[in-house]
Every structure is written in structure tokens, then in C-alpha cells.
Length: 70
Image (tube, rainbow, N blue to C red; front, side, top):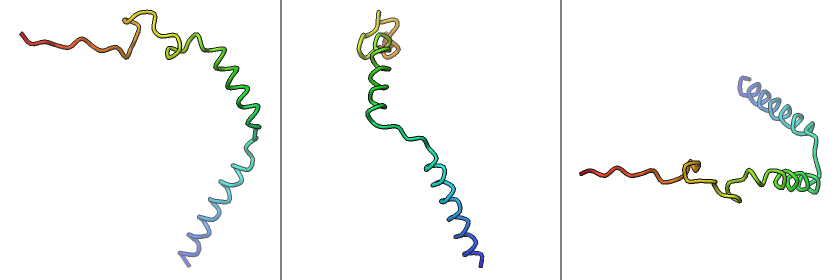
């Protein structure tokens, strides 16, 4: 009986998850792509992969100076 109630509980959890997923508002891919293109073009000046860093000191990924032992 315990196995049956456990299985029933699992099925209820799955049904609730499917209900939540079915309630999600869907958006056409064409609209999503248009929004992404708009966002990218509006923020391309802030994108360091496109514009680079103004100086090496601003670059958080620059190579750190190595320690040399004398």
C-alpha cells in the first residue's frame, strides 16, 4: 500500500509540474529573435568582446605579473 501511495504522490508532482509548464506564456521565435537583436544592438557599446578594453588596467582577464625569485 505504501508503494502505491508513493507512486500516486509522484504522479501528482508530475501533473503539477506539467500544469505549471502549460501555464507559461509562449512567444513566437520570430518575436524573441527580434527582441534579442534589438537588445544586442542597443548594448553593443558595452560589450568588451566587440569593443575591447580601453586600457590593460581595466581588463580583469589580463595576465598578472609573475613573481620572480632572485
